[in-house]
Length: 364
Image 1 (cartoon, rainbow, N blue to C red):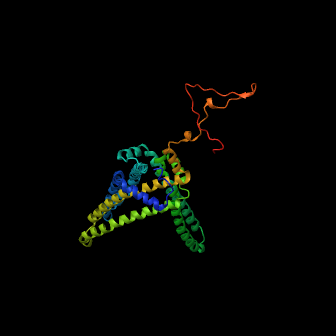
Image 2: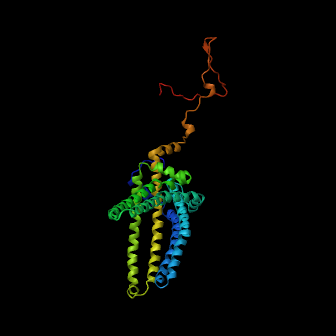
Protein backbone atom coordinates (compact mmCIF):
# COMPACT_ATOMS: atom_id res chain seq x y z
CA UNK A 1 0.00 0.00 0.00
CA UNK A 2 2.91 2.37 0.65
CA UNK A 3 3.79 2.44 -3.03
CA UNK A 4 0.19 3.32 -3.98
CA UNK A 5 -0.17 6.07 -1.36
CA UNK A 6 0.27 9.43 -3.09
CA UNK A 7 -1.67 12.70 -3.43
CA UNK A 8 -4.87 12.03 -5.40
CA UNK A 9 -7.20 14.25 -7.36
CA UNK A 10 -10.95 14.21 -6.72
CA UNK A 11 -11.43 12.00 -9.77
CA UNK A 12 -8.79 9.52 -8.59
CA UNK A 13 -10.38 9.41 -5.13
CA UNK A 14 -13.75 8.61 -6.69
CA UNK A 15 -12.18 5.95 -8.94
CA UNK A 16 -10.44 4.35 -5.96
CA UNK A 17 -13.67 4.54 -3.97
CA UNK A 18 -15.48 2.63 -6.71
CA UNK A 19 -12.66 0.04 -6.88
CA UNK A 20 -12.69 -0.62 -3.12
CA UNK A 21 -16.50 -0.74 -3.15
CA UNK A 22 -16.63 -3.33 -5.94
CA UNK A 23 -13.90 -5.48 -4.42
CA UNK A 24 -15.44 -5.54 -0.93
CA UNK A 25 -19.13 -5.16 -1.82
CA UNK A 26 -20.57 -8.08 0.17
CA UNK A 27 -18.77 -7.50 3.49
CA UNK A 28 -19.34 -3.74 3.37
CA UNK A 29 -23.04 -4.08 2.59
CA UNK A 30 -23.39 -6.79 5.25
CA UNK A 31 -21.97 -4.38 7.81
CA UNK A 32 -24.17 -1.41 6.88
CA UNK A 33 -27.39 -3.41 6.48
CA UNK A 34 -28.22 -4.10 10.19
CA UNK A 35 -27.94 -0.45 11.33
CA UNK A 36 -29.93 0.66 8.28
CA UNK A 37 -32.65 -1.87 9.12
CA UNK A 38 -32.74 -0.68 12.75
CA UNK A 39 -33.00 2.97 11.71
CA UNK A 40 -35.71 2.32 9.12
CA UNK A 41 -37.62 0.13 11.56
CA UNK A 42 -37.55 2.78 14.29
CA UNK A 43 -38.56 5.60 11.96
CA UNK A 44 -41.11 3.37 10.23
CA UNK A 45 -42.98 2.57 13.45
CA UNK A 46 -43.57 6.24 14.22
CA UNK A 47 -44.33 7.04 10.58
CA UNK A 48 -46.94 4.28 10.27
CA UNK A 49 -48.64 5.36 13.50
CA UNK A 50 -48.89 8.91 12.17
CA UNK A 51 -50.21 7.73 8.81
CA UNK A 52 -52.87 5.47 10.30
CA UNK A 53 -54.02 7.96 12.97
CA UNK A 54 -53.91 11.16 10.95
CA UNK A 55 -57.33 10.70 9.21
CA UNK A 56 -59.03 10.47 12.61
CA UNK A 57 -57.90 13.99 13.59
CA UNK A 58 -60.83 15.50 11.68
CA UNK A 59 -63.40 13.62 13.77
CA UNK A 60 -61.61 13.27 17.13
CA UNK A 61 -59.64 16.16 18.59
CA UNK A 62 -57.94 13.92 21.14
CA UNK A 63 -56.09 12.14 18.32
CA UNK A 64 -54.20 15.36 17.60
CA UNK A 65 -53.02 15.44 21.21
CA UNK A 66 -51.94 11.81 20.93
CA UNK A 67 -49.90 12.56 17.83
CA UNK A 68 -48.23 15.52 19.54
CA UNK A 69 -47.31 13.30 22.49
CA UNK A 70 -46.04 10.68 20.07
CA UNK A 71 -43.83 13.29 18.41
CA UNK A 72 -42.42 14.34 21.78
CA UNK A 73 -41.76 10.69 22.65
CA UNK A 74 -39.93 10.24 19.37
CA UNK A 75 -37.70 13.23 20.13
CA UNK A 76 -36.94 12.02 23.66
CA UNK A 77 -36.54 8.30 22.93
CA UNK A 78 -36.19 7.84 19.19
CA UNK A 79 -33.57 10.53 18.60
CA UNK A 80 -31.04 9.07 21.12
CA UNK A 81 -31.58 5.60 19.66
CA UNK A 82 -31.00 6.91 16.15
CA UNK A 83 -27.86 8.66 17.36
CA UNK A 84 -26.49 5.44 18.85
CA UNK A 85 -27.35 3.40 15.76
CA UNK A 86 -25.68 5.97 13.50
CA UNK A 87 -22.56 5.94 15.69
CA UNK A 88 -22.29 2.15 15.51
CA UNK A 89 -22.88 2.20 11.75
CA UNK A 90 -20.19 4.82 11.13
CA UNK A 91 -17.70 3.10 13.42
CA UNK A 92 -18.18 -0.34 11.91
CA UNK A 93 -18.17 0.87 8.30
CA UNK A 94 -15.09 3.05 8.82
CA UNK A 95 -13.25 0.17 10.49
CA UNK A 96 -14.13 -2.09 7.55
CA UNK A 97 -12.97 0.54 5.06
CA UNK A 98 -9.71 1.00 6.97
CA UNK A 99 -9.08 -2.76 6.78
CA UNK A 100 -9.84 -2.75 3.05
CA UNK A 101 -7.52 0.21 2.47
CA UNK A 102 -4.70 -1.54 4.33
CA UNK A 103 -5.25 -4.82 2.54
CA UNK A 104 -6.53 -6.62 5.66
CA UNK A 105 -9.49 -9.02 5.72
CA UNK A 106 -12.87 -7.53 6.62
CA UNK A 107 -14.96 -9.32 9.23
CA UNK A 108 -18.42 -8.29 10.38
CA UNK A 109 -17.70 -9.35 13.95
CA UNK A 110 -14.41 -7.45 14.08
CA UNK A 111 -15.96 -4.26 12.71
CA UNK A 112 -18.84 -4.28 15.18
CA UNK A 113 -16.57 -5.23 18.06
CA UNK A 114 -14.47 -2.18 17.29
CA UNK A 115 -17.54 0.07 16.92
CA UNK A 116 -18.97 -0.96 20.30
CA UNK A 117 -15.56 -0.60 21.98
CA UNK A 118 -15.41 3.03 20.79
CA UNK A 119 -19.13 3.67 21.11
CA UNK A 120 -19.04 6.81 23.26
CA UNK A 121 -16.27 8.40 21.22
CA UNK A 122 -18.32 7.93 18.07
CA UNK A 123 -21.46 9.27 19.77
CA UNK A 124 -19.63 12.36 20.97
CA UNK A 125 -18.24 12.95 17.49
CA UNK A 126 -21.80 13.11 16.15
CA UNK A 127 -22.98 15.28 19.06
CA UNK A 128 -20.13 17.76 18.59
CA UNK A 129 -20.73 17.90 14.85
CA UNK A 130 -24.45 18.54 15.39
CA UNK A 131 -23.85 21.19 18.04
CA UNK A 132 -21.06 23.10 16.32
CA UNK A 133 -22.39 22.85 12.77
CA UNK A 134 -26.13 22.97 13.44
CA UNK A 135 -27.64 23.72 16.83
CA UNK A 136 -25.43 26.62 17.96
CA UNK A 137 -25.52 28.55 14.63
CA UNK A 138 -29.31 28.14 14.44
CA UNK A 139 -29.76 29.36 18.03
CA UNK A 140 -27.64 32.43 17.29
CA UNK A 141 -29.66 33.08 14.11
CA UNK A 142 -32.98 32.78 15.98
CA UNK A 143 -31.77 35.18 18.69
CA UNK A 144 -30.72 37.73 16.07
CA UNK A 145 -34.01 37.30 14.20
CA UNK A 146 -36.09 37.82 17.34
CA UNK A 147 -34.04 40.88 18.25
CA UNK A 148 -34.54 42.33 14.74
CA UNK A 149 -38.30 41.78 14.92
CA UNK A 150 -38.46 43.38 18.37
CA UNK A 151 -36.53 46.43 17.17
CA UNK A 152 -38.81 46.73 14.13
CA UNK A 153 -41.89 46.64 16.38
CA UNK A 154 -40.55 49.59 18.39
CA UNK A 155 -40.17 51.80 15.33
CA UNK A 156 -42.70 54.45 14.36
CA UNK A 157 -45.55 53.47 12.00
CA UNK A 158 -44.00 55.50 9.17
CA UNK A 159 -40.77 53.52 9.40
CA UNK A 160 -42.26 50.07 9.93
CA UNK A 161 -43.01 49.50 6.23
CA UNK A 162 -39.46 50.23 5.12
CA UNK A 163 -38.04 48.33 8.09
CA UNK A 164 -40.19 45.29 7.26
CA UNK A 165 -38.85 45.19 3.67
CA UNK A 166 -35.27 45.51 4.90
CA UNK A 167 -35.91 42.86 7.53
CA UNK A 168 -37.31 40.47 4.90
CA UNK A 169 -34.26 40.93 2.67
CA UNK A 170 -31.92 40.44 5.63
CA UNK A 171 -33.83 37.32 6.64
CA UNK A 172 -33.33 35.73 3.21
CA UNK A 173 -29.63 36.69 3.17
CA UNK A 174 -29.26 35.47 6.75
CA UNK A 175 -30.80 32.08 5.97
CA UNK A 176 -28.51 31.60 2.99
CA UNK A 177 -25.49 32.67 5.06
CA UNK A 178 -26.55 30.30 7.82
CA UNK A 179 -26.70 27.37 5.39
CA UNK A 180 -23.25 28.20 4.00
CA UNK A 181 -21.82 28.54 7.52
CA UNK A 182 -23.28 25.23 8.69
CA UNK A 183 -21.96 23.39 5.62
CA UNK A 184 -18.52 24.99 6.04
CA UNK A 185 -18.36 24.02 9.72
CA UNK A 186 -19.51 20.49 8.92
CA UNK A 187 -16.80 20.06 6.30
CA UNK A 188 -14.14 21.19 8.80
CA UNK A 189 -15.22 18.33 11.08
CA UNK A 190 -15.96 15.79 8.36
CA UNK A 191 -12.83 13.68 8.97
CA UNK A 192 -13.55 13.27 12.68
CA UNK A 193 -14.80 9.69 12.45
CA UNK A 194 -11.91 8.48 10.23
CA UNK A 195 -9.50 10.10 12.71
CA UNK A 196 -11.09 8.23 15.62
CA UNK A 197 -10.85 4.93 13.77
CA UNK A 198 -7.41 5.36 12.18
CA UNK A 199 -5.62 7.18 15.03
CA UNK A 200 -7.68 6.06 18.06
CA UNK A 201 -8.25 9.61 19.27
CA UNK A 202 -10.96 10.93 21.56
CA UNK A 203 -13.85 12.96 20.18
CA UNK A 204 -12.63 16.52 20.80
CA UNK A 205 -9.08 15.68 19.73
CA UNK A 206 -10.51 14.10 16.56
CA UNK A 207 -12.50 17.28 15.84
CA UNK A 208 -9.36 19.42 16.17
CA UNK A 209 -7.38 16.94 14.08
CA UNK A 210 -10.06 17.01 11.37
CA UNK A 211 -10.01 20.81 11.34
CA UNK A 212 -6.26 20.66 10.75
CA UNK A 213 -6.35 17.96 8.08
CA UNK A 214 -9.11 19.52 6.00
CA UNK A 215 -7.13 22.71 5.37
CA UNK A 216 -6.64 23.26 1.66
CA UNK A 217 -9.13 20.59 0.57
CA UNK A 218 -12.47 21.71 1.98
CA UNK A 219 -13.73 22.53 -1.49
CA UNK A 220 -12.86 19.03 -2.70
CA UNK A 221 -14.57 17.48 0.33
CA UNK A 222 -17.67 19.59 -0.33
CA UNK A 223 -17.66 18.41 -3.94
CA UNK A 224 -17.48 14.80 -2.72
CA UNK A 225 -20.44 15.36 -0.37
CA UNK A 226 -22.35 16.98 -3.23
CA UNK A 227 -21.67 14.06 -5.57
CA UNK A 228 -22.71 11.50 -2.94
CA UNK A 229 -25.90 13.50 -2.26
CA UNK A 230 -26.68 13.62 -5.99
CA UNK A 231 -26.08 9.86 -6.17
CA UNK A 232 -28.47 9.24 -3.27
CA UNK A 233 -31.14 11.45 -4.82
CA UNK A 234 -30.73 9.85 -8.24
CA UNK A 235 -30.94 6.29 -6.89
CA UNK A 236 -33.95 7.21 -4.75
CA UNK A 237 -35.78 8.81 -7.65
CA UNK A 238 -35.06 5.88 -9.95
CA UNK A 239 -36.75 3.50 -7.50
CA UNK A 240 -39.29 5.73 -5.75
CA UNK A 241 -40.95 7.46 -8.70
CA UNK A 242 -41.97 4.34 -10.68
CA UNK A 243 -43.07 2.50 -7.54
CA UNK A 244 -45.17 5.40 -6.26
CA UNK A 245 -46.83 5.75 -9.67
CA UNK A 246 -47.54 2.01 -9.75
CA UNK A 247 -49.07 2.07 -6.24
CA UNK A 248 -51.23 5.08 -7.16
CA UNK A 249 -52.50 3.27 -10.26
CA UNK A 250 -53.25 0.14 -8.22
CA UNK A 251 -55.29 2.13 -5.64
CA UNK A 252 -56.88 4.51 -8.15
CA UNK A 253 -60.42 3.28 -7.36
CA UNK A 254 -60.11 3.95 -3.64
CA UNK A 255 -58.52 7.31 -4.34
CA UNK A 256 -61.33 8.43 -6.63
CA UNK A 257 -64.17 6.84 -4.65
CA UNK A 258 -63.94 9.17 -1.66
CA UNK A 259 -62.77 6.44 0.73
CA UNK A 260 -60.12 7.29 3.34
CA UNK A 261 -56.78 6.45 1.68
CA UNK A 262 -55.36 4.74 4.79
CA UNK A 263 -54.44 1.53 2.99
CA UNK A 264 -52.87 3.47 0.17
CA UNK A 265 -50.85 5.64 2.58
CA UNK A 266 -49.65 2.63 4.59
CA UNK A 267 -48.64 0.70 1.46
CA UNK A 268 -46.83 3.71 0.05
CA UNK A 269 -45.04 4.29 3.34
CA UNK A 270 -43.88 0.66 3.60
CA UNK A 271 -42.55 0.65 0.04
CA UNK A 272 -40.72 3.94 0.54
CA UNK A 273 -39.20 2.64 3.79
CA UNK A 274 -37.95 -0.47 1.98
CA UNK A 275 -36.39 1.66 -0.76
CA UNK A 276 -34.83 3.94 1.85
CA UNK A 277 -33.31 0.88 3.55
CA UNK A 278 -31.79 -0.29 0.26
CA UNK A 279 -30.38 3.16 -0.54
CA UNK A 280 -28.84 3.56 2.93
CA UNK A 281 -27.31 0.09 2.80
CA UNK A 282 -25.77 0.62 -0.61
CA UNK A 283 -24.62 4.25 -0.26
CA UNK A 284 -23.21 4.30 3.29
CA UNK A 285 -20.06 2.31 2.29
CA UNK A 286 -19.39 4.79 -0.53
CA UNK A 287 -19.58 7.68 1.93
CA UNK A 288 -17.25 5.93 4.40
CA UNK A 289 -14.72 4.90 1.72
CA UNK A 290 -14.51 8.40 0.25
CA UNK A 291 -13.98 10.05 3.65
CA UNK A 292 -11.29 7.54 4.62
CA UNK A 293 -9.49 8.11 1.32
CA UNK A 294 -9.67 11.87 1.88
CA UNK A 295 -8.19 11.34 5.35
CA UNK A 296 -5.17 9.45 4.02
CA UNK A 297 -4.82 11.84 1.08
CA UNK A 298 -4.67 14.83 3.43
CA UNK A 299 -2.09 13.10 5.60
CA UNK A 300 -0.02 12.45 2.49
CA UNK A 301 -0.26 16.07 1.36
CA UNK A 302 0.42 17.65 4.74
CA UNK A 303 2.58 15.12 6.60
CA UNK A 304 4.32 13.01 3.97
CA UNK A 305 2.38 9.90 4.94
CA UNK A 306 3.52 8.07 1.80
CA UNK A 307 7.17 8.48 2.85
CA UNK A 308 6.30 7.30 6.34
CA UNK A 309 4.75 4.15 4.92
CA UNK A 310 7.75 3.49 2.70
CA UNK A 311 10.07 3.80 5.69
CA UNK A 312 7.85 1.49 7.74
CA UNK A 313 7.85 -1.09 4.95
CA UNK A 314 11.65 -0.91 4.80
CA UNK A 315 11.81 -1.55 8.55
CA UNK A 316 12.99 1.96 9.46
CA UNK A 317 11.88 3.87 12.50
CA UNK A 318 13.20 6.72 14.60
CA UNK A 319 15.79 4.50 16.24
CA UNK A 320 17.17 2.98 13.04
CA UNK A 321 17.05 6.25 11.12
CA UNK A 322 19.58 7.88 13.49
CA UNK A 323 23.23 6.88 13.01
CA UNK A 324 24.39 4.39 15.66
CA UNK A 325 26.93 5.45 18.22
CA UNK A 326 30.50 4.40 17.59
CA UNK A 327 31.55 1.35 19.60
CA UNK A 328 33.69 2.25 22.57
CA UNK A 329 36.56 0.02 21.41
CA UNK A 330 36.75 1.98 18.16
CA UNK A 331 36.60 5.49 19.59
CA UNK A 332 39.85 7.44 19.16
CA UNK A 333 42.10 7.32 22.21
CA UNK A 334 43.92 10.37 23.56
CA UNK A 335 47.56 10.71 22.48
CA UNK A 336 50.40 9.98 24.91
CA UNK A 337 52.58 13.08 24.56
CA UNK A 338 55.27 11.61 26.85
CA UNK A 339 56.32 9.19 24.12
CA UNK A 340 55.37 11.44 21.22
CA UNK A 341 52.98 8.88 19.72
CA UNK A 342 49.35 8.04 20.12
CA UNK A 343 48.38 4.73 21.60
CA UNK A 344 46.45 2.47 19.28
CA UNK A 345 43.78 0.28 20.79
CA UNK A 346 44.27 -3.42 20.72
CA UNK A 347 41.53 -5.94 20.14
CA UNK A 348 41.19 -9.51 21.26
CA UNK A 349 42.05 -11.67 18.25
CA UNK A 350 39.77 -14.40 19.48
CA UNK A 351 36.71 -12.11 19.21
CA UNK A 352 37.39 -9.60 16.47
CA UNK A 353 35.12 -6.58 16.06
CA UNK A 354 34.45 -5.49 12.53
CA UNK A 355 34.58 -1.77 11.99
CA UNK A 356 31.48 -0.26 10.41
CA UNK A 357 32.20 1.64 7.22
CA UNK A 358 31.77 5.17 8.54
CA UNK A 359 31.38 7.76 5.78
CA UNK A 360 34.16 10.27 5.36
CA UNK A 361 33.88 13.79 4.09
CA UNK A 362 35.36 12.70 0.78
CA UNK A 363 32.67 10.05 0.32
CA UNK A 364 29.95 12.51 1.30
